[in-house]
Image 1: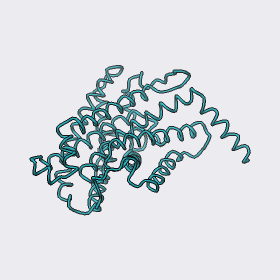
Image 2 (image 1 turned 45 degrees about the vertical axis):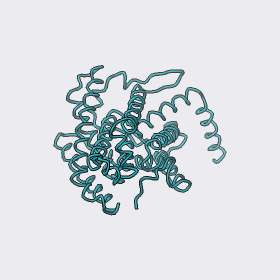
Image 3 (image 1 turned 90 degrees about the horizontal axis):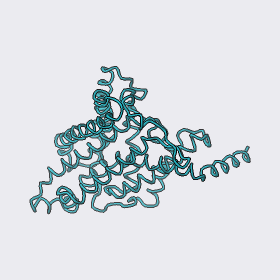
Image 4 (image 1 turned 90 degrees about the vertical axis):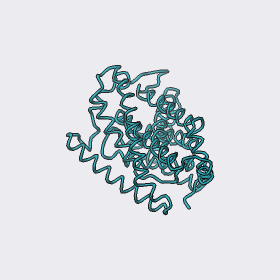
Length: 340
């Protein structure tokens, strides 16, 4: 039996090394990395400036998925125009969740900034439980199945995104390319926001020395509020994109379900920790690494090299354990933010 197993692995490795398979896995890896970076970007910039570990991040992503999915289902006319409807809905979701995130920061997070991180964790966990229940109630009222992926937003997806294409004998979905383009756009916009905008300068100043920044006339509380809101807004757009991706992350299946909050929260934390708490550059690099591991292990499962569906999830958490053991600060760990 051992000899047969070894033979299967050798044959599978040979198949994976074929150019068509390598290209297909590479496209899947970058596509998944794009989703990871969109989900984790908000988490890392919130922690990088404010030092708050937001355990409601997954629930806020799921909120974006359901509200955004509802908007797409209502306004998308079908065909190419559905793509325009997606961007309109994405803008609305970003603005709505940015405002909601800002309100959450001012009303709930701000009063406990000077408390132990345990208070931050307990508060955001409580917010997550409340949001999950409210989403479940709202979906039930609208007659949406909470267990199976919500079909209505997927029905509005343009055909050219759901179609599987072949290039150099490698197969990939149109949605994969769309996710890569959105991921690149997210990285560029967040980098510009952090490095070229006025609030980016404020953020760097507040990260280095909040008291000195305030003495120089920077409105530190307002900066905190805007950063928290923007982080939540990015997560909401990522959740909306996941309503179209039925494959999802870590071979767990995608689409809008009640499990979405947990399915995105854990890998988001893995990406942020491996990349380095508070480092956006580290988040991008870690997302690429985790995306590759996810795509490779998913390929092994789909091609029946292994029959254990949890392999991608296990592999990703093994990466987390190794990273913490070898470099606890992460790849680009920031020194300016601590949990003391």
